[in-house]
Image (cartoon, rainbow, N blue to C red; front, side, top):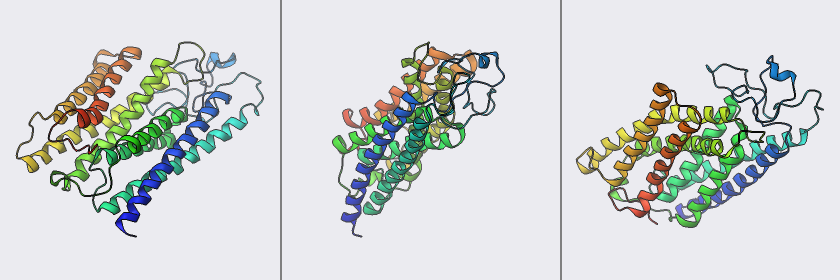
Amino acid sequence: MSAEQLAGLSDLFVVAAVLLYVFAMVAFAIELAFGKGVPGTAAVAGRSEAKQPVAVGAAAGDVAGKFPGEGGAVGTPPGEGAVEAGEPAAKGLGAVWVGKAALVLAWVGWAANLTAIVTRGLAVDRWPWGNMYEFVVAICFAAVTAFLGSQLRYNVRFLGAFVMVAAALGLGLAVKFFFTAAGPVVPALDSYWIAIHVTAAIVASGLFTMAGVSGILYLVRGDGVSRLPSRADLERVAHRAIVFAFPVWTFAVIAGALWADRAWGRYWGWDPKEVWSFITWVAYAAYLHAKVTAGWRGRAATIVQLVAFACLLFNLVGVNIFISGLHSYADV
């Protein structure tokens, strides 16, 4: 296939990924709304609360889907949430199957997103994140990968609808406002360092996005009965994602400094992108420091991580579009 055909195929797969993510979002939302419990959570067996009717979203911290080393019950199969004693097993069964279909749609959308990235790379004969459009497409892929990878082990299907919203919205904005025709990049980006520095930034950004979604849901969720997962689950998901993403982001910043030395003859020059990358690093470091040393939990810790997420979004989008600098490669 020619480069033009590959580029056109990539654009079609991006649109297909948007549609598949939207369909998956709807299916996840149906399961969350009409299922017999919050998918991916369950009451802890043997607790006194389990002898009484358990409200969906209650018993924060005593739910399944816990991560290794945090105690509590091990996760139950997705869709087997807490229910009242004696509740018919068939109740919500249709929603469970819709949830399973949502996972299939999410995986197919993930494959379409990956195919769009691969075909774009083949079309331009380089790593396909040399402009804002390609970067956003890759970050959406990373966010969905973080969710699906977590679901394989930690049972976080309750996040599906919200991660799919973020991915579909991100791809939609990329197509509508950031689209850039396939072509060569500026000389400064024509380096193997793009595969090291930018890839690390994309991976970390995808994990930070999943944490940000969890944090927003934490603030939206009330204290009473809710179809949303418990705040303890949401905080746990966000924390684990950030713990994994932070060293990756640290590596991305260091790799960027090494690339800057080769490209511009200095490691650090207080370029706007460099400044906001460092601000983002400090914000997430403050969140982790507050969790470990001061024991911050709940709303206070969530607000700190959402401030850090806002810094990340501004660094990824705002700096490229609104602030001129050596890293202004948005092409929009």
